[in-house]
Every structure is written in structure tokens, then in C-alpha cells.
Amino acid sequence: MNRTPLPTTTQRSAVVPARAAWSAVVRRGEHLTLTDLGGNQAVDFLVYDAHDTAVRYSAPDTLHAQGSIFLTTGSVLLSDEHTPLMTVTEDTCGRHDTLGGACSKESNTLRYGHHTWSQHACVDNFLSEGARYGLGKRDLVSNINWYMNVPVEKDGTLGIVDGLSAPGLRVTLRAETDVLVLVSNCPQINNPCNGFDPTPVEMTITAAAS
Image (cartoon, rainbow, N blue to C red; front, top):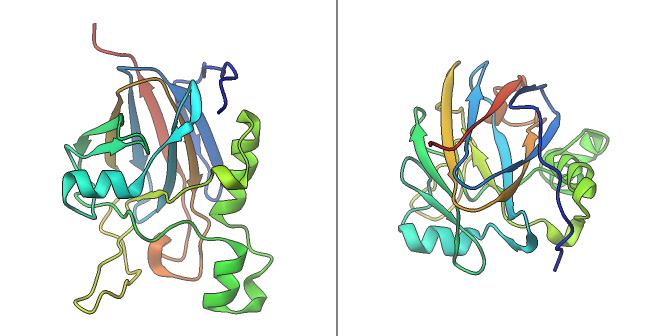
């Protein structure tokens, strides 16, 4: 259990470069908007209770509660204690992945060959950014991939195909409690999740409605 006080962000809007990491504490009632600036850019996403990071996003709880493997407007991101962390309040893309996971050096070499070992990956971003808050590898759980298109075939196999997003599309989430958000603006260049060309995204935090 981690109850270390966490810093708030004074940056209310930031452009996250291609392949880079980003994090922020989003207070209860505030909205976080992720804008796909170039189109077809996957954004890997983890969320924790800001006051106790042992409470974190749970894919099984979230998917079971909503009865769908894809996220869109109205989806509630639940913790491993089945408590709401964030709710999707707006989605102009329409579908987001919960199964594809985060790319890593290990998965890259398995899927695409040992020559990819030196390529930066989302797990690297999560570890470096999470370290700022005392988080380590055992704190990484199944993540959300905003804008990533991972269809499930009839035989249960997963595909990673061209995204459904386009420049300017966005997804907005409302914090249901104080949360810590970690983002990896996916650096993957070996499959179509980023159109083989990672691009920047914009993160905007807006105040709670008065």
C-alpha cells in the first residue's frame, strides 16, 4: 500500500511527443481529455487511486461490469476493489482496446525478431514515469489502449489492425476519485497500431463543474 502524498500538476494542457511518457494527478470531478493530433495513434493508459496506488485499474472488473471488451462513452473504469476510478464522458472515436496490452522489449522480440530488442516500448515508459511515484514493475497491470483497434475473430484470436481514429478525435474521462494517470504515447513501429509512424497527442485537464 502506498499512501505517499502525490504532487498535483500545474500543467493543465500538454502535448506529449511521439514515443514519450506523461503522468498527472487528476482530482475528483476534473476531466481529462486525450486528443489524437495526427490520427491513428495508440495511447497506452494506466490509472491508480492517487492516495493508495495498491488500488488500480482492473480490466476483469471493468469488462465484466459493462459486458463489453471495448470502451466508449459511458464506460466506467473500475478498480480491483470494484470501485469507480474514471468514467468516459465523451468519445468521438467510438471504440478502444482493453486486450492488446503494452508493448515491451520481450514481446517485440517474440513477435517481430531479436533485431527489435533496442527499440523503445510502452513498458519502458510506464516504468520510468511510474518510478516518480514509487511504482515498479509489479505495479503494472493490464492497460487500456485508447484509439487502438484490436478486433477479436470468431476463433478468439486477436488482430492489431489500422486504427479507427483520425486527427482531432478525442476521448474525455471524468475522475470519480483523485487518480494518478500514467500514459505511454506508444512508440510501436512494427504493427499498424500507430500507422507505423508514432505522432504526438494532447492531454488536457479541465476543472470540475461548479
